[in-house]
Image 1: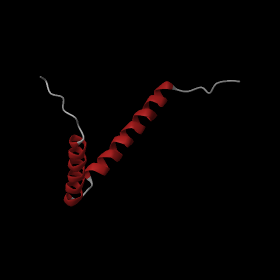
Image 2: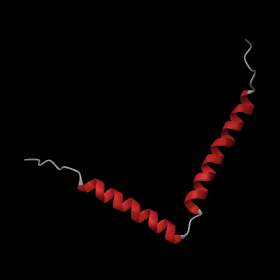
Image 3: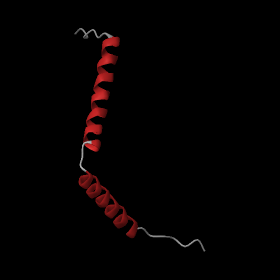
Image 4: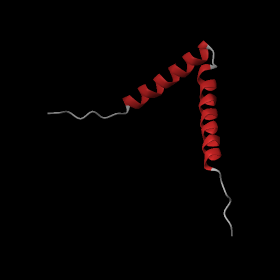
Length: 62
């Protein structure tokens, strides 16, 4: 059983390219939307946060 020989420089470059592609995909998703889509996402996030806060139990400090 012989291990595959890997050039570390090429491996690092390939890994960096992969990371850049993932970041580019995230940017395409977040910046490539219409204003109404952004507003809808913001409203849904605020609604979810409000629902989460409503279920929170506050303890009195006295």
